[in-house]
Length: 154
Image (cartoon, rainbow, N blue to C red; front, side, top):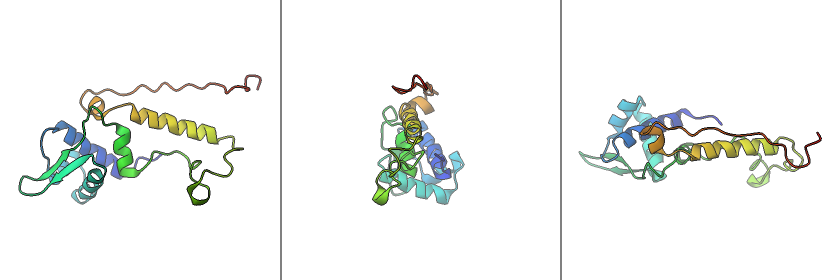
């Protein structure tokens, strides 16, 4: 998975909104405070609004405001709102018409890639915006490698 520049910028803007949780923040101010080019910030604002993460208001006192509870909204939700599903491989979608890969059943790596993808999604989904941005907490990565049944003698 490659975290896009757009996702990085969106997360910076979300951090500004979480810090200003009860107020309205202009896109220009959010862009300036988070080091995001204004024209890019406008595009990100539209994506965040389309995902329901921010609400927009027009007028002299207009801008955007956090539309979700940062105690319940995860990093995974923000990442997927901006760049789509978190994926590491195309095992699930590389077949005809988006079906799973036709080689998946005999592929020695499919379960590895799919497992790693699951770990990454769980990791991003285990931390809320409040934990990350206000409390400074990070999830602990605790993945383990275990042999699947029948592999003990290999």
